Length: 149
Image (cartoon, rainbow, N blue to C red; front, top):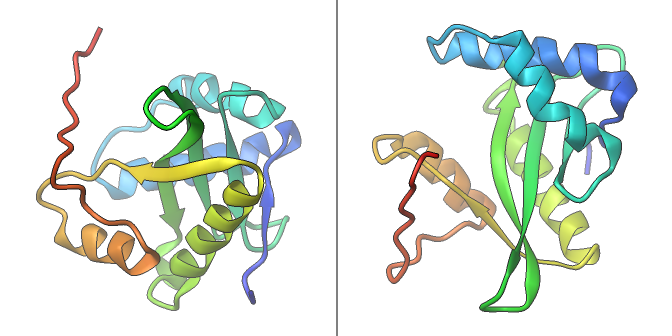
């Protein structure tokens, strides 16, 4: 692997939050720094909820990957859910995202995670092609329904 990735720690919160703000603004939304801070704080503590990986140099990361964890009663194993993947626009389309997601999947597999999932909006064909390139496949027998509480 040529792209460096590493698990983020509480010391990485400021650059991570800056990248998250860029990702949200790039998507045309208004960034909520307080929400982002609350969302990633437990993930940076190496707890059971998930993990964040930073991509690229420590001083100026190029992107990040956020994965949260759940337990599957069906398969009796931990599953990961890719919540966010962001790579700076200036370095996209160079294979970095593919390389990083593959490395995260390998690391999670070695750590005992049995499956990695991703939610995608229906109208994001480019994002779907990217995820399929990495190895994700649609499951015809599964439909994810959500009840926002």
